[in-house]
Image (cartoon, rainbow over all chains, first blue to last red; front, top):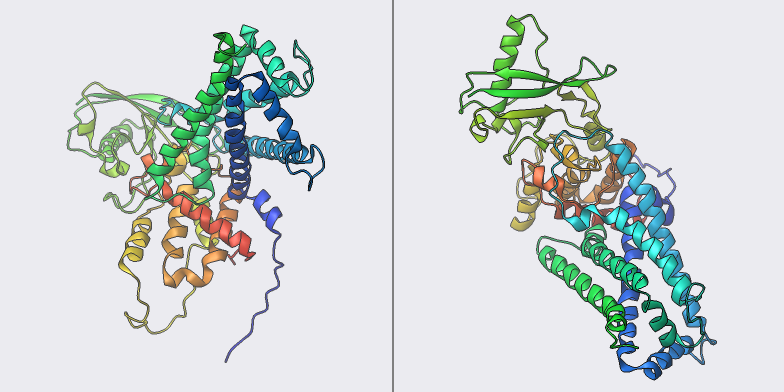
Length: 235
Length: 252
C-alpha cells in the first residue's frame, strides 16, 4: 500500500530565508563585501592616474561621468554605481550589526584566560568596519561633495585632491583608514569565500594568499596617493 | 605533583557561581585530568564537602561526555578530550583554572556540568536519514566512492562534545552542525534529504541561540577530533544551494 503525502508547507521566499538565518545574513555580508572589493580595485587603479599629471587625472574624472554614453544618459552609470555601492554598504553594515549583537549575546560569560589565537585582522573586523564607515562619510564630504574640501573646485578633482592631502592630518587619517581597509580585506576576502561555500581544503591556502595579496596591493595603491602629495611627487 | 586548582563552583542553574581554589597533592603524571578531579572529589567527600560535578562517561575519548575549559582552552592544552588529557602536560606547582563550557545555548546545570541538549535538538531537525526498517540492505547495493566515504567518515568522527561552541568567541555551533551536515550530505544515503536537512539544522541551530560564524577558526583548533574549518564552508554551500532551490526545511 502506498500513501501519498501532500506537502502543506509553503516554499519560503529566497530573500526572507537568507535574511532570517545567520548563514544567509553572513552570505549577504559576503556578497556585498565582494561588490565593494571589486569597486575598490577599480577605484585604486583609477587613483594611480594621479601620477600622470593633472590633465590625465581630470580627463579620467570626466570620463567616469560619460561611461555608457550614448546608451546611458550623462552620469547615469556613475549614479547606478553609487546606488549599488550605497545599498552594499548599508546591507553590509546592518548585517554586521545584527550578527554582532547576536554573537555577543550567545557568549555572555568570558573565560579567566583570554587566549588570543585568531589573527589581528580577524579580531578587529568589527571596529575596523566602524572606522571604515566613518572614513567613507569623510571621504565623500571631502572629495565628492567637496563640502569640507579647502579647494572646492568642481570638475578639478586633481586640484581638490592635492589641496586635501596637503593637510597632514587628512593624509594621516586616510593612511590609517587604508591600513584598516587592508586588515578588513585580509580577513574579509577569505571569510567571504568560506561563507559563500567556495572554500575547500584544496583551495584554502590559495584563497588566504589571494586575500593577503589583495589587501597588500589595495593598501599600497591607495596610500601611494597621499604619500605622493606629502612628498611633493604629486603637486 | 602538587597543584592549585581554581574550579568554577555553582550550586545550581539559578545561583551565581564563583571560582574556588583547591590544593591537590600526590598527583601522578600518569593520571588523566578526570582522575585528578576524582582524587580531589574523594577528599572533598571525606571532608563532608560537596564534590565537584562534571560530566564523564567512556573515559576513552570517544563518547563526547566530558568537557571543561582548562586555562582558557576547551579540553585543555592537548588536542584531545579532557579524559585523555594527562597530568604530565602540567608542571608541579601550576595553578590551573577549570571552568564549564560558556555559551548562552549551554546553560550551567551545576559546577562544570552544562546542558548540551541544544545539540540534540539540532540533530533532531535533520541529522538523520530516513530509511525503511526491515531486513538489512545488501551491502553492495549502494556503492560509495572511497574519497566520499573518507570525507563522510572524517565528519562522522564528531562526538558532539561541544568544545567548538565553548572555544568560539560567538558561542557558535557551526562546526558541530557542519560536521553532521557534511557527514550525511555527501553520502548517497543522505541524498534524499540533502536540502531539508541542512535548512532544518541551520534553523534549529539559530533557534537555540547559538551565535553566527565569524571564521575565527577557534573551533577547529579546539576540536578533539580534528573536524576541519573548511567543513563550515561546505555546509554554507549546502545551505545556500538548498535556499536557492527553495526546498523547505526538514524536521518533524
